[in-house]
Image 1 (cartoon, rainbow, N blue to C red):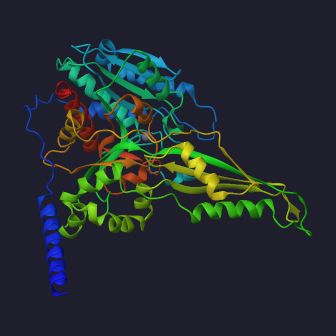
Image 2 (cartoon, protein in one colour):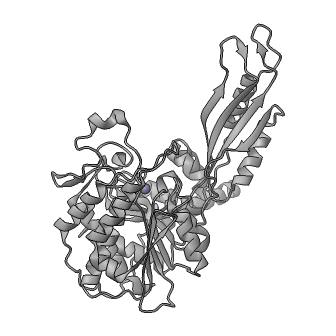
Image 3 (cartoon, rainbow, N blue to C red):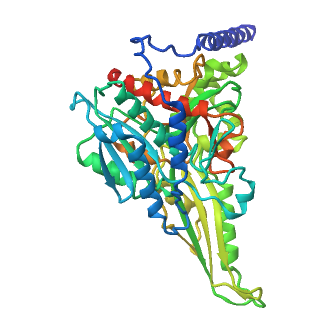
Length: 492
Ligand SMILES: [Zn+2]
């Protein structure tokens, strides 16, 4: 007995030692030293702000309702690019794709080298009429005041389009020739799924045999308070995005007068089905991009949490339980179930023959729209209910991009040049929403989602929210990012 006890003590002590050692060894990954950066060409900062402000003044709004878009606004935006960036338009070729999206090709010195694709979108979300009084500068004013450019699109995502163009214009003036071909792709319908813009551009390039060495689109952020346990400013880079499907549940029963209800009603069956789905959430898994995220966070965490991240092989279930206690953590680990719409009945004393509900699912890597649909039918298990995909965008989860290799290294290195003296941890993560980058998923293993604008307190709420704005300093960081990225194009 004593021997068993001693052996047990030795085992626990040994295990503790191994765990501590693993945690102690966890250090931020070093950046390979690489060649010194070429000189930074001077940026026309004041002009850059004016050009961004001019872009904001074109109300290129996408409507989720399907309302028609203002094509003149988009054409005005295109014209604004032409007049603002003469060198770029003299050097690059420009094509219109899907009527209002733009594809620019900047031929590289080595046409055989795998190209780089820089993505952005020109459309913005609408501003509800009722919110207008709360805007300190009207949403499409493009006012420059108090060190900011104000208006819808200053963060999402005209700032990306304009800072890419600014970087290209600046580099051409400085005599830079890209070592590999650079594609600039600007969609016109990202805010409503990118089905006609980004998808058509990707199809066009894939048909031409393009296999990018690196694709960058919006998605991640550089900000503080992004992940639990880490207070400093981080750069989170999307290496995958969840899939999307909405299912319509239709419940049918005999209608009639409410004074003599049958045993089961359409409304009752639908309510039961939705409750059953909520009671049986999809299984969680601490794998793929979310496991990668936790491991990358490890070196920057306090020791107790570092101990857990360095030993997920043992502590995984505990970490999983802790993460699952908040909505973000849950969404990182499982396919989410969100009932969003209900319709039934026309009168208080009439049993409706039909009741419908819509449930939206965000699909985690490892599952598909088909497996989600099959599981939903199994969980509901009711002949009164039919389940069918809603006629909206259906997307499987994207493949997961690599966090090793030259494209990831170039991106990490470039992020550290954005703000002088600041070296934010670069953490890969799973994007919960959707971006235009999803269309590249099957065609490149280096698709990254990152908005290169350092965000301050409250800035994230301004995206799709009130008083969207970007500071002159943060916008300059975005231009710097794209210049430094392109200067490193030869390292891929
Ligand atoms: Zn966006």
